[in-house]
Length: 192
Length: 171
Image (cartoon, rainbow over all chains, first blue to last red; front, side):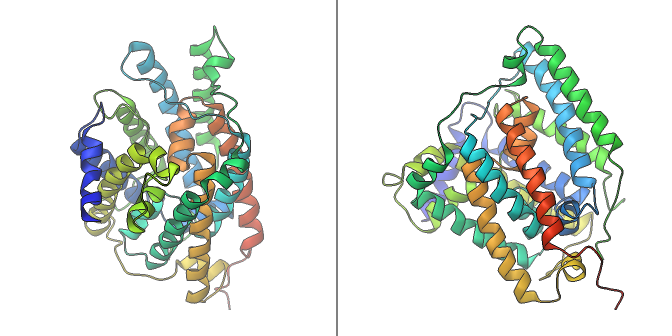
């Protein structure tokens, strides 16, 4: 098993962009932001599900709004490219429902969970074990799950829908999300 | 030092991190955080990638996210020790006690079940909060908007049905 664990670093080192150190750095900063803003707390995510805490949607929508405009500019200038996920209706809808139920009860998602574990949350470690079994189950029965997921309907984006007005559509989308992030009233659930 | 970063500063930094990850000087790819789970399951249970097509599909992304996760654990741990000073071994979040019940057993069983559902859901949809919400919607991807809408509605319905609306601490 050890050689397979070590091969993780070799695999990442062979990617065309980003050394292992850069990927570690990206993860490190991600961990610092998530921990420092406290969005990995059960009170923040389950609190949002109960509509008693709005820090998570405010931060998410602001980040997406800013990044969508920034990324469009970067792609236009040749500094980055888009990596679009396909529309697979069955997978997105059934997956979204299971994900939403899991997220509300667990009070974590796959990115914030590990940051909570690093803070000493034992219940989250148990949930991660459940997640590992989920990953195993999915891998073993991938052919069955594929039938739920359905065919790919392509990779539409705002740019492909509003051809000729790519910049404008992204600008409206981005600014719209930034405004939403500001007007959602700030509510915080006590974590004591 | 201030023990908590405000949401707007967190949002600005998160947008910066996303852009850095996308850029060619960064990693030239989006951030994701659920593909590493089946990848790790494959290693833990010693499954032969040749026999499982899904393990071949997630080979590169799983490894990438595994390394990113290592960084996230380190960053989260150091921040919880030195900055937020919140590191503590706990079994139950305070709000679970207030809005659900006072049973550690119940919290642990529900954690296991919901962790399982979360990963099955993310793998069916092809992404999670990081891959679909943050990275996908930042690209204006329609798939991510469909996923985001379904998750948002289900999350709020589950929150309403699963938890009590009034806190229990008055008694």
